[in-house]
Image (cartoon, rainbow, N blue to C red; front, side):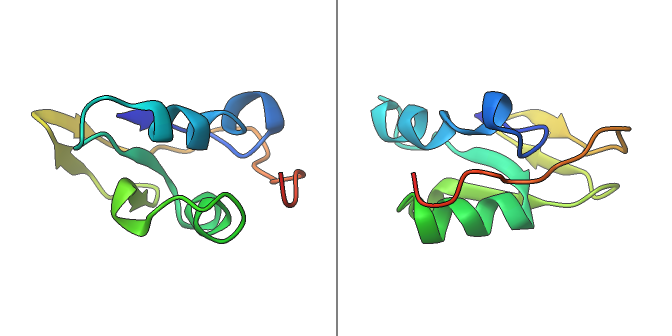
Length: 82
């Protein structure tokens, strides 16, 4: 799993490349809906390779409990296209 905390360039830009290079077929990107939509539309990531989450909604994946929590950090995707 590739966990994306926010949409800033340094935290989110490489995830699509990592998922495409993954050797395990069940590898997924875990992120919020807006970042997921960006990856699908602009970076050609297959929707089944993404787990969309929102704050406070726990999700069990591959034996891990994942919970998105509040953070005092912005989450804008300032990189359109590539």
